[in-house]
Length: 111
Image (cartoon, rainbow, N blue to C red; front, top):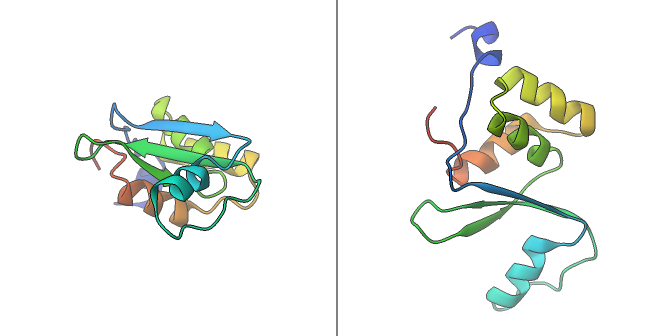
């Protein structure tokens, strides 16, 4: 696949995938209450991706800009357009980290 074809790729999100954006540390609060010995949450904003790969909801913290990138993909934008949106909102957006987080969370219906 050529680099040009990659930018035109569409990655549909699984219907049960939900992006949560908050000024609060949502994932860290959940982890603090669910996992023994989890660190106390710091007062920072956090974006979280919730997926249901095996029917049970599973939260996944997102790196900076990943929520914007995933939201653009969910709206039907191409990979290239979604990356452009995320980098416009977050100069430190890292496609590699964001793609890895989404793949590990099994957020996509097809590749």
